[in-house]
Structures are given as structure tokens and as C-alpha cells.
Amino acid sequence: MTSAAAGALVDQAFADRRLFKMALARRPGGPAEARSRYAGETSPPLLLVEAPAGVGIEALLAEIDALAETCSAGTNLILLGTLNDVTLYRNLLRQGVADYLVLPAPPMRLIEAILDLYRDAGKRPAGQVIAFIGAKGGCGNTTLACHVGHQLAHQTQADVVVADLDLPFGGADLAFNLEAPVGVQSILNDPERIDESFLQRFSGKVAEHLYLLAAPGSAEVDAAVSGVALETCVAALRQQAGYVILDLPRVWSDWVRQALITADHVVVTAIPDLVAVRNTRNMLDLLVTSRALDQPPTLVLNRLGAARRGEVTIRDFAAAVRFAPTLTIAEEPQGLGLATSLGKMVHEVQRGSKAALAIRALAARFVSAPPPRPGHAAAGSGTATAPGWLARLLAKG
Ligand SMILES: Nc1ncnc2c1ncn2[C@@H]1O[C@H](COP(=O)(O)OP(=O)(O)OP(=O)(O)O)[C@@H](O)[C@H]1O
Ligand SMILES: [Mg+2]
Image (cartoon, rainbow, N blue to C red; front, side):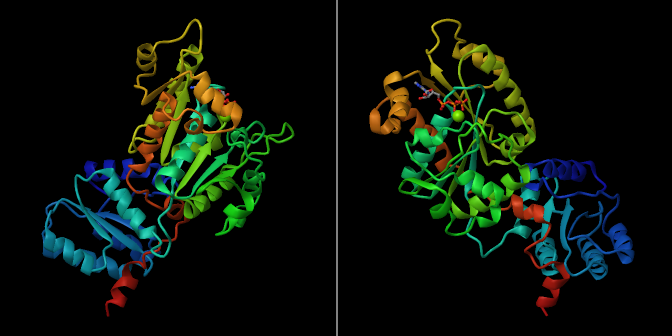
């Protein structure tokens, strides 16, 4: 890399969750420098090279040809440059270059180009991961996670898995009024067991297309979850279900932060009081900076009107957290409150209630979201599914 534009593009792309696990080594120079470097050492699986400024099309193609000769067969090349020319692009692809990005390019364009190399064409598209976290105990986070899961299964007819990750105190089984096997722990202990039939074996079926991986809900169980095991599980779950809903406990540890940062969408559930304001602000600050290329998190301000005194107004809440709530839901003892105590969904108890409508709208946000891109796990594995530069050239005969 030589130019500031290329450097900034690469920095932004590699700071994103989708490329989290890829190690980046930056070296000065362009194709010529890369060529002399890899004449003496094995080239990496992925090479991002910037075309030198001012070089013409013919000269650039010749440089890329020469670089190809020194790189190993498994190396994929993505070229960055300022020449915006369709003939150049076509010729580069013909030469086996995986992609050519015209600078300045949006970071997502580079991320997509890299993920494309790791995409497994044989696999079905991965499901979306939606992480729910409460800003404070009792915000209604589990209630909302379960209701959104229920709605998504109903609205999309795709399989939805709700994973209750609050191991000692999780209450998703109560919200669904379901005696489910303690599936979360089984798969966290042994993620290898997630296969085509795991939903039948480890989860409880709540409704058509809706499955619950229940928490043990026992004081004898530790709250800690292994980040590595969770990542493996979530990657496997996304291959099996259209939506994976994570009901996260409000413990601020590495594995929870990792689950939040790597999810496709994040929902923060809060209530209008001062502690929730402070916690929401801290959470949103972290989420907004570490997910800079994603849609902002969804903020639900729940249980409005529940406190007799000292409630923070919606306006003050938004000003204090510097973020407007996406949705507000009033305290509804005869709606959501009653539904939980009956182990039912609010749609079954009070179909037309404001809470029921709000939850339908909340779920709909994820239905209209662009199709998820598979692959942060795959990208992290370091093995490209694309054949590599020389291999592609040889295949062309
Ligand atoms: N809008 C609402 N109106 C009335 N009751 C509500 C509302 N939202 C949630 N509740 C009730 O609040 C209680 C706590 O909800 P829930 O268990 O979902 O909260 P949580 O944030 O997951 O709590 P925890 O911190 O224990 O995980 C439940 O009894 C639920 O029915
Ligand atoms: Mg909960």
C-alpha cells in the first residue's frame, strides 16, 4: 500500500467484525515490491496490492503478470487502483485477479470482495444472528427476545432458534411455558454435535419453526460461557436456522461483548430510569464504535409508565444516551405482563394491544433486512474457498 486512501480503506475494513479474525500485515510498495518480496518467501493466501499511481493499463497488466509468476498457487490477489476502466477490469479478472477495486471505495466493498473468496458455494446462506441485551435487570429483554423469535417464525416461516445464554437464571423456557431439554449447555460443551438433526435432539419445539435452546436455570451452574465455544455454536446454528436469537445475560464480560459485536443485529432493551440510562449509554457507545459499518443497534425503551416516580422522559432518555429509541412500549400489565405469567405470547392474550403491534414492528425490522452474508467464521478460518490465483489461471488452460 502506498496511498492514504488505500491505507484508510484497508484499516476500516479490517476493523470490521466480518474480518475480525484475519491477520493483516501491511508493507509499503506496489506490485513490484510484492514481486521481489515473494520471490524469496511464500506468498500469503490473500494479497491486497495497490497499483502504482500514473501507470498505464498495459504496464499494469504486465506488472500483475510478473507478480503472478512469483506467487504461490493458493494466493488470491485483490488489486486496488484509481484507473476506472472496464477493459482493465476484465483483463485483470482474465489474469486470475480475484477483484479490482477503484479507489476511493467504501470499506464494505472490500469486505465483500474478501468474503466472496471464503464463501462456500455448496452451503445454504447463513441465518441472521440477533443479539438481545438488557440495560438493566428486568427490562423485559427475555420477553422481547422470545416474542421477536415467535413473530419471525410466524412471519417468515424460516426456522428460528432462541438460545438462552443466561445459564444460571435464564427464563426463556418460562416465557414460552415449555419444558425443554437443557440444550444450550449440551451444545456449548460439544459444538461438534450441531448437525442437521440437532434442533430435534437438543431444543424444545415451541411452535411451528420455533425452537428453544434452554438454559439450565440452576444456581449450581456458572454464568461464564467460553467465547470460542459460543462462536463455534453460533456459526453452526446459522447454518441450520434462518434466525438465531441470542438472549444475553447482563454480565459485561468478553464473551458477551464478542457476541454483541459479531451479531448481525443488536437489540438493547432499556427502561426509563437513571441506571438504565447510564448502562444504555455505555453499551451504545461501545456498539456504535465497534460496529461502525453496521446498521445502528435497535434501542427499545420498554415498560414506560411502570415507575410511579422518578421516570426519565423519552426525550431526556434520548438526549442522555445520544440515541433515539427505535421503539417504545408502555407497561401493560394486562398485555405483556399477563402473557408472561400465562407462558403465552401477547398476541395470544391481547392481539391488538400496543405491545403486540410494537413487537410485530420490531420483528419486521429483521425481515426486511438485507440477506445476511455468510462467512465471518469462514473468513476467520484462513482457508479460502476460491481456488487461488495460479490455480485459476491453470484451470483456464
Ligand atoms: N411492557 C411490559 N408490560 C408489562 N410487563 C412487562 C413488560 N415488559 C416486560 N414485562 C414483564 O417484566 C418481567 C421481566 O421481564 P424479563 O424477564 O423479560 O426481563 P429481563 O430483562 O430478561 O430480566 P433479567 O434481567 O432477569 O434477565 C416479566 O414478568 C415480564 O412479563
Ligand atoms: Mg432475561
